[in-house]
Image 1 (cartoon, rainbow, N blue to C red):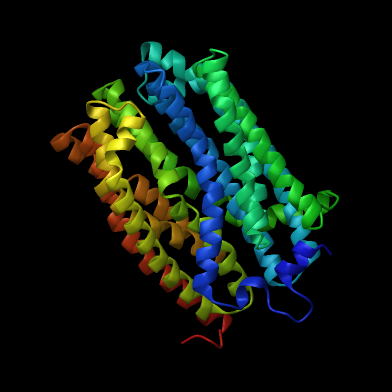
Image 2 (tube, helix red, strand yellow):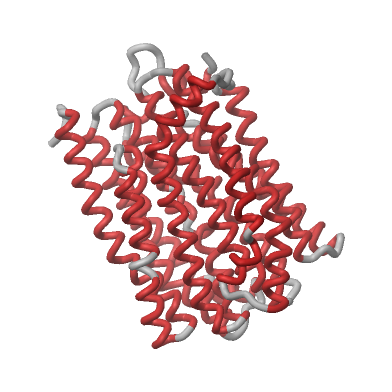
Length: 460
């Protein structure tokens, strides 16, 4: 047994990593460290649009905006697979079955890569119609399709890296999970200006730089699993079939849950398209600022999941409930602090992207009220993580799709009629308030029901 696995599951008779110790500390450490990695993933897109904005070509900037909706869709698919794989690995570790955890990690990575290749291929073939549905036309549509036809080639490597990072978090190896995408972002930050400006490749240069970054992400995820966590097992048909069954209940719902967000974003993109390329550019900038500035909140789903999974596996539903409450408190503190920083830096942020007119208005709108309202999205993220690890993935799927359809489209249409392009984003945020509150109430009902079923002796 490697030192990393031993640290995760303990020696015989010892409690798993997250079943002892201070829960708030677990939430903070896992969220902060995994958020650095997650922010690094999304900083790839942010760095890309930053350099593209320096070209001061509205067509190129808008093209990256439309492309972001498609790339977000495929990345969310990979995150959904990662959630399923990390959940079953964490459950095995909670039961102190190291060999089962290793086999599930191996088969999960194989499954993630295979599905990633197939899913990306389907989207790649349909790029033209998809871009048209988003509202892009003329030269902007052509630039978007060209950019996506190149940048989509690296998406399977990103999916493999995301899944590997999820397995590392299940082992409690937060630092190495973080570094997976940090190195990818470092490579992109170096390659982007070289390929875009140095070689003069412009938009295609940004696509190739992103692909190089994703290849590094995949390598940095596989290496520590091989060297520090016991490596991988031989893939057998029987083992693969068994693990697919174990993951299927979570994977299907987790993927559906995750892709609800980019589907909702695609609706918003389509609604904002009639307001012109400047509005699309503004939406693209705010869309990429959101997961980077609020990466800690996005990381909660991946960070809280293993904590909930291990404590549920050990029958400690009192600690599951405490984990959810601590996560809510942590979310409130983070959102408040980040919003203050964004508001203070709204002017320099807009200047950095050469934002003018409606583009600048949308950036200013994000750096204040929209960022503050993201607290309610955080409640939804926490609830999704808890439901996925308590055997109720369908509930998280239902909540997420409700939030990004009923909680987005009617509100965006309504507010757009009052405030135009700004109203679209305001409506998108306003709908999240209702679903965030409802999701938190429902997850506590799930915890109580699970405690009654398992007979948790610590239940208050």
